[in-house]
Amino acid sequence: MTTALILLALLCLLAVGVPVGFALGGLGALLLLVGGFSPLMVPQGFHSTVDNFILLAVPLFLLMSNILLKGGVGNDLFAAIQDWVGHYPGGLAVATILSCGIFAAISGSSVATAATIGTVAIPEMIRHGYPRKMVFGLLAAGGTLGILIPPSIPLIIYGFITEESVIKLFLAGIGPGILLVALFIVFAVLHATFSKQYRRSHKASWQQRRQSSIRALPSIFLAVVIISGIFNGVFTPTEAAAIGFVCALLITGPLLRTLTMPKLKDAVIESMVTTATILIIIAGAKVFGKAITLYRIPQDLAVVITATFTEPWVFILVVSLVLVLMGLFLEALSMMLIMVPVLAPVLLTLGIDPIWFGVYFVIMIECALITPPVGLNLYVIQSVAKAGMGEVASGVWPFLLLMLFTVAVCYVWPNLVLYLPFHL
Image 1 (cartoon, rainbow, N blue to C red):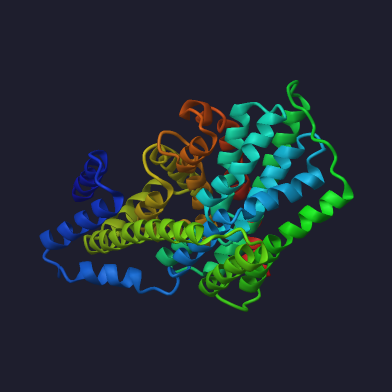
Image 2: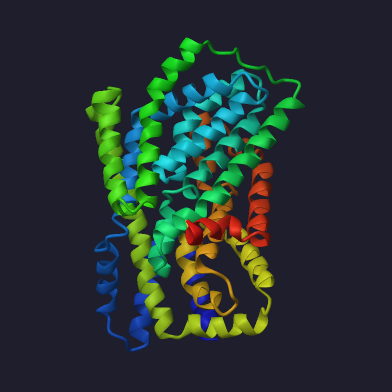
């Protein structure tokens, strides 16, 4: 009964428009007071969230991605890949997907990936006859690669919540990330092959390819430095974010000379606002999680779930349905911070690896990023393309199905997720 009342209270707060961080933190503080627990847990929860070395990577990765965005790095990256593959069937779409994948490996941010690549790719693809709905859906879905391909901000936060290795989570995201890129490319090529409106790009000269590749080389070098440095143990994900931030300044400043002081100021302000929002939500979730733990709600739910769902696949199926429904109303980070603390105690009982579950969970919240009415990537593409929400949302369904297919493949073939973190 207590669990139902708490969940009902949380849903009511969210329904009337209370920000997620304040709803979680406020309800958690109220539960602590009603239960006779020390109110000092509230400031302690906020302090432990802010004073955390792992979470320091979040503002640094955000700052790095915003600097690259303002510096026009995505334009150079897309132009180089387009020069190499643009003349093939579906070449522009392939260039868009590959650009999203590479920029995702630099930024770790879905919004930055969608906005950066979408700005240059959308007008180019429409000019070559790609249907508008398909273009918008492709960019919205391609942007979600930013939270799966390492470095991934949601995987960092998942590691913080569950105390799992962030490096293992990054390694686990590589296989599904590559599979999603491959599925998106196959779909784009088949779509272009059977489309009557599509027009191929002209084949770029070798000189043009060489020039565009040289200009994009620093961005690719940055991605290689960040990923290889983390996986080889040269630096931690937080240190990688700091190194990436410095490299982003050097690339867009003295090297490419595309970053001006007004653009740098905008990047800092946008990163600051996003960081504050994320940390407030995490801090609120920390207080709420402490309160429900003291009320033994996760433990009681774990008993109920393990008694109800004896098969792991049934549990995963039910959780998937819940996340799809939640994704219609909540953004990705809120879903993670509400659900993971409740579900984590059940995983080992059902024989589900927490690393595998982290990657599975991120793919599912990727779906939330492109499902209306609150899919964040839909609003990003709508803003970039100056299009209607209905037109953007109607183009994402094929890619949403491909994401759900990837989840099924990960369940049937868990080594796609678990081989690298435990055998590399």
